[in-house]
Amino acid sequence: MRADTLVVIGGLTLIVLILGAKHFPELWRGVVKGWNDLWDALGGGGRFRH
Image 1 (spheres, helix red, strand yellow):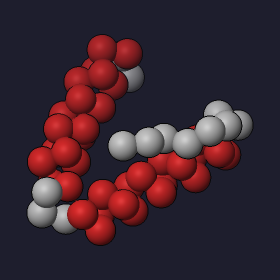
Image 2 (cartoon, helix red, strand yellow; image 1 turned 30 degrees about the horizontal axis):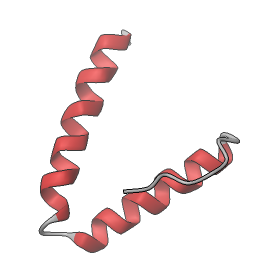
Image 3 (tube, helix red, strand yellow; image 1 turned 90 degrees about the horizontal axis):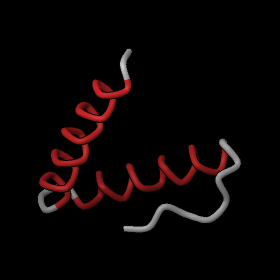
Image 4 (cartoon, helix red, strand yellow; image 1 turned 180 degrees about the vertical axis):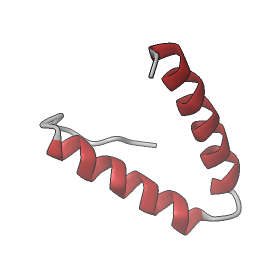
């Protein structure tokens, strides 16, 4: 998959999540936790904050 395609998909996903966060805060918390776990697994250190 091309990088620009990933950027578009990522951007759309982010928009949907931000809009959905107003209606599904527990879903958003789950997504953030998932990102934190993924980031840790990749050795990113620190946390993804929103």
